Image 1 (cartoon, rainbow, N blue to C red):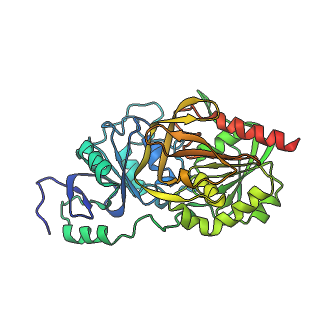
Image 2: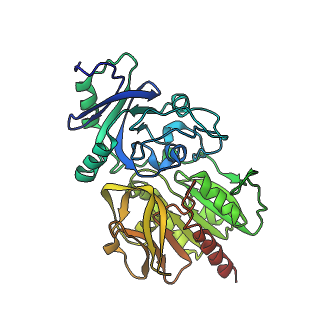
Image 3: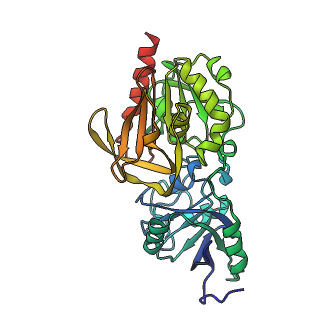
Amino acid sequence: MTDLLAGVTGVLVLADGTVLQGYGVGAVGSAVGEVCFNTAMTGYQEILTDPSYMAQIVAFTFPHIGNVGTNLEDVEQVTGISETAARGAIFRDTPTDPANYRSGSPLAQWMERRGVIALAGVDTRALTRLIREKGMPHAVIAHSPDGQFDIPALTAQAREWSGLVGLDLAKDASCRQSFVWDEGPWDWPAGYTRPEAGKYEVVVVDYGVKRNILRSLAGIGAKVTVVPANTSAEAILARKPDGVLLSNGPGDPAATGEYSVPEIRKLVDSGTPVFGICLGHQMLALALGARTVKMEQGHHGANHPVKDLTTGKVEIVSMNHGFTVDRDSLPAPVTETHVSLFDGTNAGLALADRPVFSVQHHPEASPGPMDSLYLFERFAGLMDRNRK
């Protein structure tokens, strides 16, 4: 055992032996993962239920988390399995009681039910600086009401964790069987809509898809069929879709690409319009001959500036990724369409001779920003032109 400050009920133990002490929130227990920071000021429930955060512990740079509580509608996972989202959360301040008409449960109770372990009372600015300087560390987050922690054992667990490189998490985040989605975008005060879906047949390959991607597709008039990550191109094309969307998801794109990239190549060769988002963007790039690499700190937040090189427009977007497409590896006839204005990394691509494009950011971002929602209309335009 290691002596800790009096009253400490939660710790974050890094692989290098660093120990951050605070107050445990949510579920009791421990979880190992990669620590990243998220700069969004809103949307903590959506962040903690985004499957792209699977095997990660999210440190929120905004100090006041939990103020609006939680509800049943803002869960982004389709499967609802808590293990396929963030493993833990780190806050500067202990979550307060909610004050919002949509709240159905305080954040702490919601995390306890979902098995999410959180740590409050941490200097999140210092942790963010550490991540910026040294990269995203492996760590164990632990919550014990009696304040008893075996720090050497937790340190060893963090050191021994293999990390995200080479890890295929999409197979676990994906649905197990196909299903049809019919819920549309939010329309205040009625809530989520049920739009007519008859204009397009769209198949979504689920690598850990977010609900708002599916809602955004329904919003352009699509009948949305979601299929598991390992579905063959032949089975997808047998549905005669007007378009195929490759979804977001967690893990190393090269690992998931071992079984998905050959199928994506067949989809591209078929001439069917293809739209990739986040992990789907990375695996599309792999299918087209590019490479992906692990980032030191990744992009996680709802305030990232991205330039659309096709229009010259700068957008503020939501991002969540720890891998990136090596822009120097993009072969002809692949065109870079978007670029991050934070660090110049690739944020989008398109084929010059096929109705195929993708973006690294999340155009469906819920609760926002909504600068990139037009990409769903761009997808609809490709499907219209392909029909003709």
